[in-house]
Image 1 (cartoon, rainbow, N blue to C red):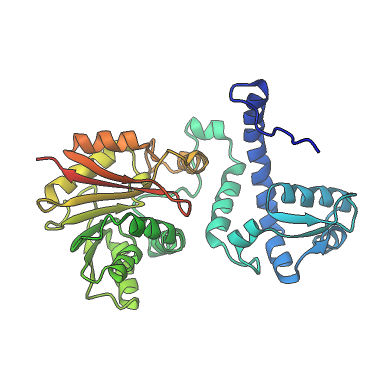
Image 2: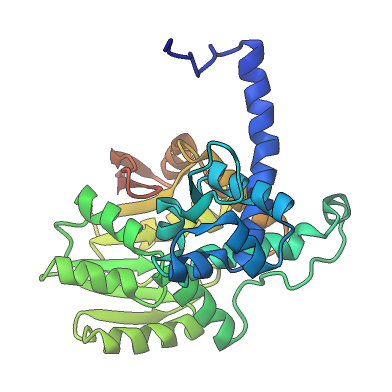
Length: 351
């Protein structure tokens, strides 16, 4: 059988059509994912294993003809695996794909972070984006700083701690803090990253700088990890307060991508004033390069969060300019690995 050429040459008419259908197909994938979760298909197939289309439709109360099409599209989108489907019959089997198992666990009951992402899309799906862009109120928007212990716990635990593994692994693989003794972790959440670094480097002491409510959560988590002799907490607001001094390494880990370039420049100026002579600034962030879909998804969210700024996921060139403006020079860049979105920048003050 003759091999079919799948990828059209760049700039061809088919390539341009593919790009357009990629945008439209993204909307279809999202709607499919929403209903996949709402119908609890991960739980159903995670518990029972692959089932015939007819049985799935009966259990979920779906019209068989339309339901079969829906299940087939879930397979095309990578959420289900389809077998015995040569003739598109009612007996076609559908089971969870490897992707679905990764997102939602083998029983289909896990994946809070991914479910929460989809819940946000549903929340804003019925809003008129045109009205929002023209100033209409945004319901239940995120406000900074987080005002209640519950909102802080939701952010620090469900959003930051549960998704920290990739950033920690990237930081360790970069060896950016391998020679650190006193490290300041700015916006260091509940201390998850600080504890992980101290576990990896026995001579390291970490101070987590964060807002008071987050700092209290950090103290509790650090105590639970039996790290109170290695990880301390310093309360402060980086918009108002200077950073504590005397640290040979200062770390921004998944912090700067929440803020627009002018804020980042202000923070770098504060680091320059606080860091010990010969110290190193370490930035571990998702950058624009190689993360286009990631950036589109998050920057779209930020339309509905007025507390956050513009151009949040920045290319390396912007970080380079901001650091130069604050008196730093980049000494090393560790590109992102296959396991995570993050790249590591190391910089030193120019004297």
